[in-house]
Length: 347
Ligand code: SF4
Image 1 (cartoon, rainbow, N blue to C red):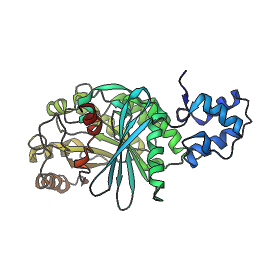
Image 2: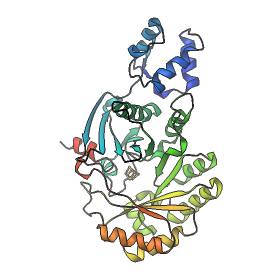
Image 3: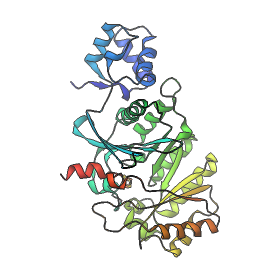
Image 4: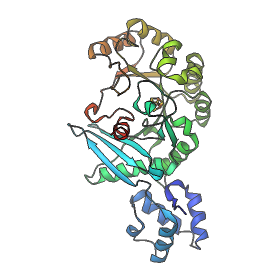
């Protein structure tokens, strides 16, 4: 029988498991501290629990879901891409991006992705399965341990790796509960961002939570015809309904929403399209992130030139839409979503 992944459990579920092992109530706190405060990977590292319990835990449970890992570091050493193998031989990617004032990890929620965005290496791979909450958490703890080697800390976390987080909603929400629980990782909710292509029913569920976790919605096109070509999910969740759901979110939570827009040369980066985007989002409590598209194997169009990105941003700014230009990171290490796993698949 496969061992159960401890990171899949809430603190209440862990307490139940320890009760079954006839352990006193305080053991749960000790085990949780070992995992989430000391970031132990192995039961042998625990100093505060008796050997008999370590043996019982070892027999039935696993702490770390990561079977093997490889990493590739960008030339400037500021982007590290990890390729992890998790249970069932699944391969996923996690990217650490180092900035002068923060360390951000981009984590995966699914193995592959069913959304099929045409420009995305993960979308081009297709979908295998959802990750469990423990497999999502395992990525975070791995990167925390890697940073600790140089006395660094993880400061920000984005659900923006492989997969559509709102299609794996229960696991993502459980991960967030464990991330933000003061007795577990105690990671600030405001330093977490969920990025979605806009699965409207789940967006509404998320709105109802009134969570402090940030929300980003990937638009990539300002009108339905083009968006349906680039982001096929648009056929089920068209722009008018999506923008209405986003407005419900900002009205209820009073939190700013981020719109992601990847600029593709000659496809979605014209002056007219900038003005269409303005019509779509004007009056909303929002911020637009612009980035030139990262190249991917099966999509022929390049990202927009820096000049075009700047011109697009200027039109938005002139109309009072707050926007930022994001720098592409780690192109030489295939740091775009899904690219490393894809390059391994095709070798
Ligand atoms: S961009 Fe995101 S939602 Fe679209 S295919 Fe890639 S991983 Fe899936």
